[in-house]
Length: 496
Image (cartoon, rainbow, N blue to C red):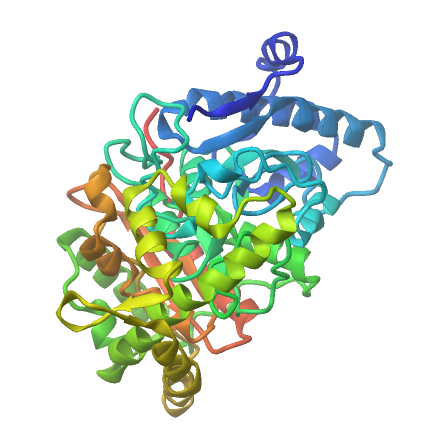
């Protein structure tokens, strides 16, 4: 299936706008909005230039839909209705939205062929709040199909010569997932901000691989309506941006929280968990060690922890909850689309081999892998996860934060840099390796942030740093992330 474009008026409009002033590569979304409000930047120019950059980056397969006509019309309408002295936080800022989050009038495919014709008539609440703050949606981004994976290898939608969402820093590598296209668009500086979703690492893993920042909010903090789900217990939408300060801005707009300022590093206590820092590749190890040394010099106390029960408890929650809840949650969502697509017909049309096998072998029959390659009924494991393992995991985190007086845990987002882009990137072994560090906090419903740490010394690829905080500490965690990003400095944009 080829990438879809809305082309109304583009042939005349884009070339005429291309020579106008542009946004500096080091700008933030907040900077852009202020420049728009001051009359220094045109909303229409910003939208047109973002659309042009999206086309120039077509080889990344970052988009399913580009909305040229809608974005330019929204920019013109916003300009016509602008009032002197009135400045919204995201005035005129182009953004992108993952294609499992509904945007009125645009296809919402979830990265899967069966939903390619589904066009919702209303924005998901998270999108509505950003648009009400002045953001302009330029398109919907590609993703690991149905959000069921973290490589971004999706053969269903393709604009470049090879399938799969590609890494902004090295197109021979994966973008990560499942919020693959948003992260690739950010890494390539097509836009400065966007939206994704996260079940076990899908906001943080692709940003780690593409050099962007993101927040996985505490589960339940963002409204879930208008989003194709996996698991109501584990899912959440979240903001993604080049700068952590823009993650703060998007989160503030979505939640109406007070403005957060960068935290004071001196006096912070961050936990280093043995199980989350073992077996790193050389680039990740070097970047992590250097980052912690800089944090220590800035007055941060690093507390070493050994939590041997963490992987076991997380494993008892992750697959049993996601695979069991997916059947009911996806079925209910499909029923609300009015398309007539059922979970069975959806599964039959899945393009990605790994996702199709998961749906047909596990989700629809409601099975889990058992001993000796057998399949067992998922319900007992799900009940045990919800009644015992997940409460025990949450208590482990609560006790650890309290006992050691920790502000957060700090660890490499992924144990290795982005791997090669091919169908094998979606293997079970690769999936488990990539979610190892992000999945435990996700299973407990905790907030987590990802920020760029460095470019790998040998690979030249982005390496990500993650923080997990106590439930409800989202704004504090963002403030800490802002301070750490200021300390470590921004990553350079990919070479042209």
